[in-house]
Length: 461
Image 1: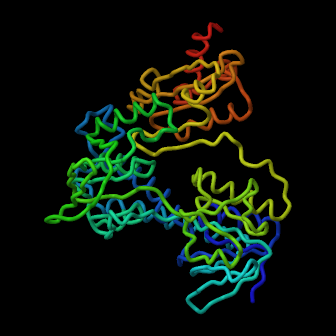
Image 2 (image 1 turned 60 degrees about the vertical axis):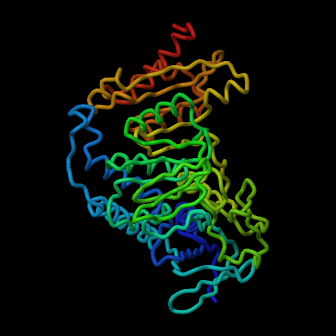
Image 3 (image 1 turned 120 degrees about the vertical axis):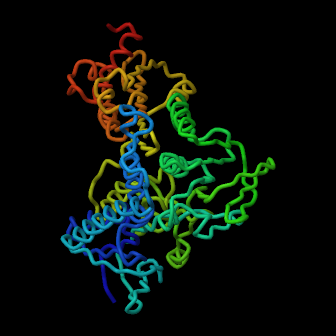
């Protein structure tokens, strides 16, 4: 039997960071992944391929340049699924190589095959060469999630797919039905609309992405409509079938929606079903998620869980930090925990990012605030790159002038947000943004323009 200080189940963002943190503390570490590779769903079906696919679409369609050269501009008129997958495959392969090298450099042992608990301190690996039993002082469960399914929508992997099945498509669909207007559904709706597909986005909720600032959400939905995306909000899909090679979706309100392909993206569930958690004295909820405390400990203090498997916020970025913190706590390394100022990024078209509070939250909590706005079309860099629709919005306390929230829509939003995040996390005020000089011409200049706008509203200058 192999004895380890730490056994990590899953090699995605949370598992990878948990393993490396323990290895840096000179602990003996093993990582188990049910695949014959590393990186988890994040690297193989989720974050990395979807963002690479988006980048390939924006590049090959010439989408970013249309603000300068016109709506008919395209770099490649006959884009194939092979063109898109080439870039995805290259990126995934490179990232796998990086992870394998990192594990090897840090002396982390890799085991491939389904994992299951024998008891609280022993994990079985159903490896190709035969079962292995690993003994561990501590365990981190970072097995991630998989797409949730419904008996109403029979995923067949061809014309009716979930987000994991997107990369098995053999051709770009001319029309697509997307069921579920969460982050995943909205991102893919934007990507396929940019490819020229007729996209219908269906969700039983009348208001979607409610965590976004309302003004930013309205702008996103406007641009999605401009790209031809049809919204069917407040509509519930009751059954899905195929007629003459086309997918047909029926709604509760007796509507019928046709498409070449249907993408079902209604949530994800923890991939815990095969772990035999009960053998370790742990229970998952109805969606396969594992409850944890503030230190990411489960009901058994020596067993931790981190990443998407514990639920909200289920971001690759936060999962990385959760894994690191779980490992640090297990081995007595002091940390300050995760900052409450988490940045959120939606890789829609245009992309969105936010950190801090939104106007609705501040109004409900009776917090006095003012806003400042900068629009990309007012910024030289916005004109240079051809993005005249982007915007950066600051929310500041009316009395203390402390930064309360930053909301950005447009090119580079997910990069740009970190300037505001740093100021917010350090308790900075509007004065910092007004008094400092930003490179010109850059999109970062939006911060100064928005800050001056807020200052003028406050009568501070």
